[in-house]
Amino acid sequence: MSKVFRFSFLAVVTAVIGFPFMAEAQEPYRLDSQERLRVHVHEWPALTGEFVVNATGTLNLPLIGSVPAKGLSTAELASDISKRLQEKAKLGEPPEAIVDITQYRPFYILGNVERPGVYDYRPDMLVLNAVAIAGGHYRMGWATERDVIAARGQSLNAVAQLDQLKAREVRVRAELNGDETFPATEPSASARVAQIFEQERNLFKSRLEQHRNNHHALGESLNFLRGEIESLEGQIVAAKKQEVSIKKELDDTRSLVERSLAPAPRILPIERTLAQFEREQKEIATAIMRARQQMTTISMQRQTLIDERRSGALTELQTLEGQRKELEQQVATAANVLESSSSQEIADVESEPKYTIIRNRNGTPTEISAKETTSLQPGDILKVIRAHQPAPSGKTADGARSENKTTTVVQTP
Image 1 (cartoon, rainbow, N blue to C red):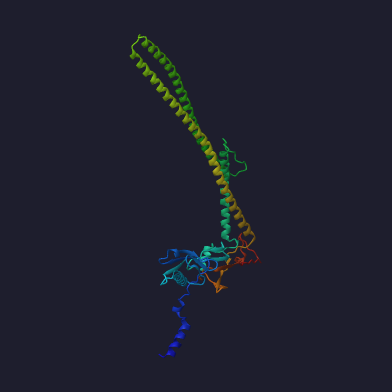
Image 2: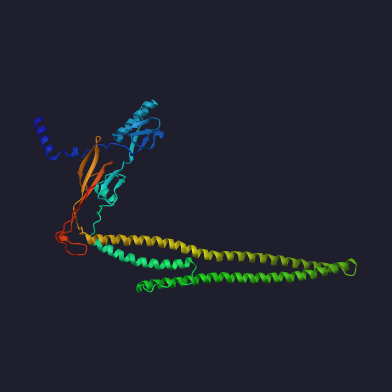
């Protein structure tokens, strides 16, 4: 086969199949600002770590200073770092350097998505991944039949929960105020609401009874300790009288012994008896002190019981108020959906979303038409545009037919 024939055949094959093995070769990724890199230089720990490409497109490294990084591949940057270090440290051979990307610069998404904004880029990201990260497609406030049914169910459920919360609030406020009775139910209340209030009334009575029992039990303990202290104090009074009598007997005996009218050993038993009475008085005094300490503890427990009831009621009331506001917001949201559905057509039909990528190529922003499977690059701006079409045959939220009515909504970024 001649060279001319081989060249012609190769040109034909290239035109038909596009050189697949060359198409698979991809341009190396070029670095840009806001990207975080991990640099590793063998045997140079000062140059090993994570660094960020700053707004000017440079990398500030120890020892060698600022290194241009924007527009380079990781391999080119690693080679540049190695050469600069070789020159700076006057090394015979350039050290081995490796650069990896640990965090890419973010991408941007706007238009018809739930949460437009800035998000971290992830390798091999597609347009569909970006839309999912942004919360999916925004529905532009249109109400579908499913939305209407869900809104009605949500409204009914929220109203029922609100009735329960109101009844609970009444009970908790009564506990917070220290009331002894549960407030009466309004005469105009429905049977369901009256039943809810009756349940809360029973709970109020049960908790009040438990509180009273605990409070009464602590009061009984205080009364018992008071009686015990009175008894101990009576024992001390009796012991002191006996002590006086024994001391008198001891003095008389000592006087007789001094006059040799009584033997000296008679003094020892009397002294032992006196010492025993003194010891018993000290023990009784200690018991009285312990009983008073117990009374102080129990008094504090009684007060704590009251305080805990109030603080628990206050905490529960704050929680209920937060839940009530949340439910009221749900009711208002459902009402808005139902109100809007009664004055506009249901948008069951939505056009396919259109995607546009704005990518910086050689310093020039370029718009690229994209699909869900199109790959994104760091720094891309993804615009999502979706048009809503009116429901077929003019079907409204109430299931009626609207004639000569056409509604088209198109939202542009």
